[in-house]
Image 1: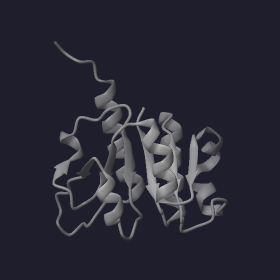
Image 2: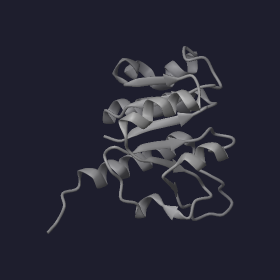
Image 3: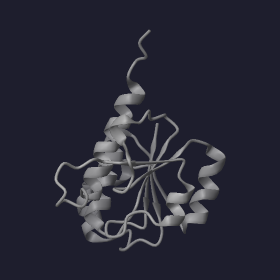
Image 4: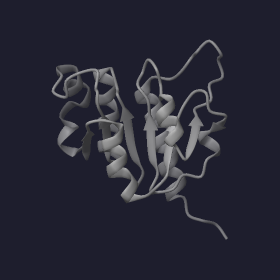
Length: 155
C-alpha cells in the first residue's frame, strides 16, 4: 500500500479532504510540520467529517524526523511537482511508494525534491491553470497508483 505524505500543508480543508481519501482507501497519511493550522482546527475536522478515527495518521516534527522513520521502511520517495517532466500516468507505481506532496502555495522545496527517487507531474491541458487543488492532486495520483498496483500482470 502506498503512503501519502503532505509536507507543511497550509489549508485545513485540503488536509481534511486528503484524510478522507486516505480513510476511504486505507492509505496511511503522514503530515510533516510545520502545519499552517492546528490539527484540531474546526475546518480540518469538518472537511474530514467523522472519518478521522479511520485515518492511519502519522505526524512528523520536521523533514529529518520523517526521513528517519521512512528510510528504514524502504520504498521509493515519489515527489509530485508541476515542474516535473514525467507524468504520473506513465509511471509504474509500487506498493511501497511514498507519495510526497508539497504545500499549496509553494509546492515541494528543493531539499525535498533532492531526496526524491522520482518526481512526477499531473499534466494540465490549460496553460492558464498553474496547478490542481492539493486534495484533487492527491486523489488522482493515489487512485492511479492503486489501480496500477492492483492490476493483474498479464503474460
